[in-house]
Amino acid sequence: MILYFGGAFGLLLLGLWIFCLVDVITTPEGATRNLPKSGWLLIVLLLADIGSLLWLVAGRPQQPGGYRPGAHERSAPRFPEYDRPGRFAATDAESDEEFLRRCRERAEEQRRKARENKQEF
Image (cartoon, rainbow, N blue to C red; front, side, top):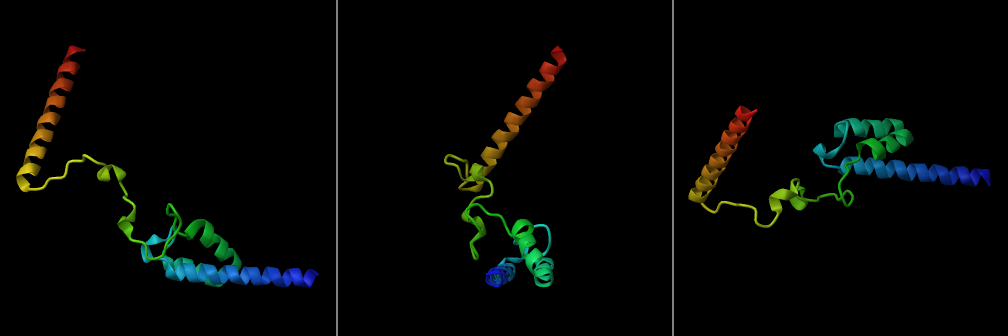
């Protein structure tokens, strides 16, 4: 019974090592955490069981919804406020210049009010 458990445990560790090895190889170059991809590959290859656990805990990319090989980078916006409805998006250069002019005017107005409030105290 003990040998059977040891053999099953060994197969489980071998499966984990193969899974992590393939996972490191198929992970995009810049997606790994804490070390470059080649570093993780060496750790998983040389340290087998411990390296596999280290990969799962500290190296594997963390993405909401799990890791999906081949997923596009813009599938989930990095800054969701950019994709909200009603956000200003210039359709031509004149609209963009008008928007920037209004932003500068508003900023100057805020600076003027801040200076006035500072002088009152």
